[in-house]
Image (cartoon, rainbow, N blue to C red; front, side, top):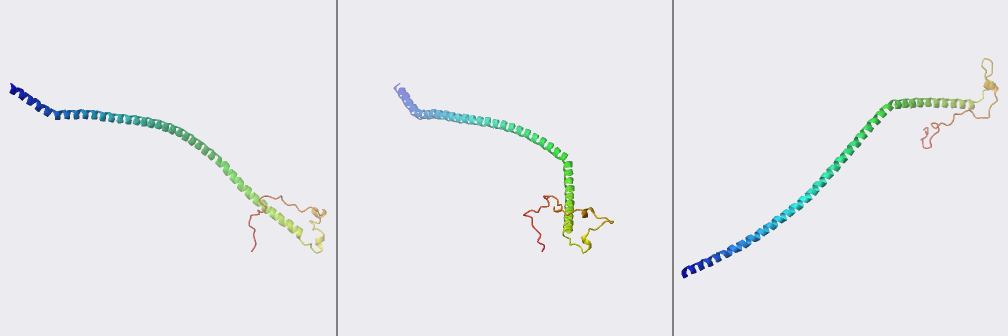
Length: 185
């Protein structure tokens, strides 16, 4: 029995000797489980933090998209109003084209008339100037000419001290101080 007891003692010692590395492995395994749990917990915290940030970003994007859609609608409304106003203004401009053409024609006609009046005034000035500066005729110049044996009405009048009639100064006839002058070279 002693031999059996020694043998059991040897087996127990051998098992203890073999269990020591297994115990160390079990402790390492327990530590590994704890580390893995901590790692898993850290990863889950990071994922939860990322989820919170992504949800906040999504909410911000949704709000931005809603604001952009509202702005797009407002801009579309303004565009439609501007297009309607443009159409109305174009219609008004088309309605004014005949009036503009009449005004242009009137201006053209008045310009022609003013040119004719200037020509007439210039001719009248030249005639007045030649009549006032003409040298007296010899003999017959002392008496005014007669028409069918009668004296003209102007011959019976006394000479006036007033200068001959001149048209009022029209703005188109007064020379501009900056206008170039003709030197006649």
